[in-house]
Length: 82
Image (cartoon, rainbow, N blue to C red; front, top):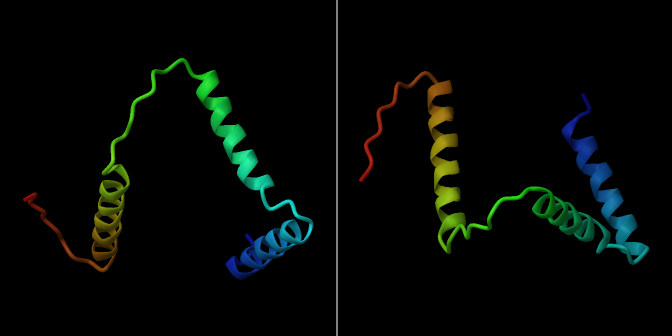
């Protein structure tokens, strides 16, 4: 497996090359096309996630990550919701 620094260097070089060629929009277009493909392919009704979705997601992610870090350190945890 390649080292993380080498991967970041390659990615940075790729982005700089796209920027110099005026094609910085290309990765964004690819992401939009990929999303559109899955929207058309899957016959599922659209469901709005709501205004607070990203805030809630960040809190859940942070809690999960911090819990795992403490367990890795050997702590036994018990949580109670407000």
